[in-house]
Image 1 (spheres, one colour):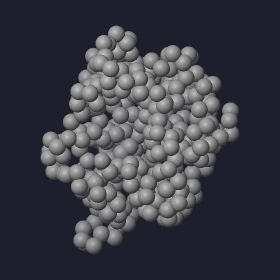
Image 2 (tube, rainbow, N blue to C red; image 1 turned 120 degrees about the horizontal axis):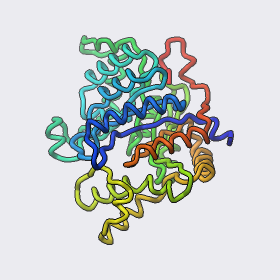
Image 3 (tube, rainbow, N blue to C red; image 1 turned 180 degrees about the horizontal axis):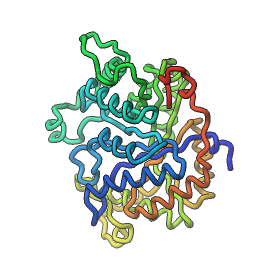
Length: 349
């Protein structure tokens, strides 16, 4: 095994994608089931996402789903990728993660993003506007203040105050700079935009300020990884999501994932075909040997400490097989986490 790959952690973000022929509740139960299976394979952490009003995604309440995942597992770290902080009051987010950490001590991560609802209708329902994302840095400061007990209001976040829940920043746009200035670990993707990703990582490392949460930069790169017996089988794993993305960009809705064989029978417009083919490219996909080579390349390029795999597909059996193959080729051995050394556990990751 490559020492570069062996030195990295491997984790998973499951977005609870709905599939044709299966309900939203089934997608949520699939997520919990997958977490149990990945724990047995030795993955480091398992995260869930936040989407509102999206037909193809069932995961709308990430802290609730994270609680279900944590209750169904024993050792894997559980968290969010992420809670979209502009959608919520920081006090409420602190309370929710305080409850999670109290129930599952030492296993909870707090991944935070800066997106607001995707449509005007969703933003109105959430009571938020596009401009709310501009205060992301201040929102993070307020959120962390609730854990430190430094809020000037005289209100205390129970049971969060005094607890250490490791925060991660999902770096979108200015997220890399915000993560650096706050001294927080950063999650950045996707793997298809390598140049942009490297620029974000460089900016993060250049501006990083040590904090109680991280004494040095901690980079998690995220994206799709598909491993199969042949390149063609790995490509089939990518087909449902590639079509769903092409559909959303041409028709304005993000549908449930169709089976790969049905997509292959579709008649597409020229624009749909271009978007679909583009959606199939740039991912890490192939046989074990091919994926190992590409992982080594991207880890050398980024010097990242962790890979967060975000693969979605219709065939959950094939998806689990891909994760099994990835686990085997990486060995799932990681470095000693700098967070593990703090006496108070404040920087635990």
